Amino acid sequence: MNPGRKRGPNGATFAQRVIYSDFANVAREDVAAVINRLRPSNFAKEVDKPGVLNSVFLLNLTYTMPQSSAAFSWAGRKVMSNETSLFHFQEGQKSFEDIGRPNGATRWLEVDLCNALGYQSDVSFVKAINRAKQACLSLNIPCEDHFHRQEDGSHLITRFGCYLVAMNGDTKKPEVAAAQAYFAAIAETFQNHLEHTNALERILIRDKITEEQRTLSGIAKAHGVQVYPFFLDQGYRGMYNMNLRGLTEYKGVPKSEHLIDCMDKTELAAHLFRITQTEAKIKNESIRGQAGLEKAAYTVGSTVRNTVIKISGKAPEDLPIAESIKNVKKRIKGTSKNFKALDAKKNKPKK
Image (cartoon, rainbow, N blue to C red; front, side, top):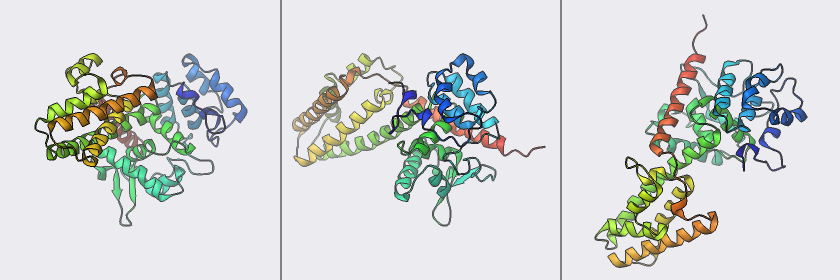
């Protein structure tokens, strides 16, 4: 299904259920019609018409046209170059840019971001904050650079920090979905906001796998594994019907890359499940000895394989490879640099 035509709870597309507070001369019932007739060739011409140019409209046009990265980047530049068209997360509220606090680098109060993203509960918002901070750690970016803790325990958050919070937010909230589109448009490092969220999820799952692999290694050795690579290989054989080396060649992963770094989100999640369930089986059944542990690794891997096939209709070895996580991290770090340059330009004193 085209993500740009995603339908909301009332059957409306994102473009039809967005916030219309910035619209000047475009009637609500005309929005979908305007969007539907747009094509990359007349994108810029159409949205430059009087009364149409505003950040909400631009962002929702790009949401319906994820195949056009040129249009997406163009919209991002338009959003930030047009000072009279500031993005509103919710009707009746100040725009995101209005609530920022320029002081060298623009920062936003945690409470302001929480309200702008439509969170009613501090608990659920803190989860998004924590995931955003974990993403910083995964990117080897100091959290304090983007989440400055104040005396009352709350944070002052940079534009990049706000981006990470939004991308890790609850997409069932219209404000979060709109914010994701906004940040993706001005970042210009991925084609659309879905790629941003997917990239961050892959990074977080990959880090969790590294953590759980260390735990599994310790448990396996404590239970009598003598040759750990043989034990590890049985998990792959169970899940893929082939060993790690054969799987790498089958999927066509470059020799310069680690296979696990080229797995998509679905496959990474399946791997994480396999690892944690292998740990659980070993502990719950008190399995000991090389042969018994290898059998446990194979059994769990085989069970996960069958589950993936049942749900996705594809064998795990036939799941597509994705862009290397190393490259994905570079692109997200590029987002941080782009935002920093953007703020420097916005906060530069006017002559």
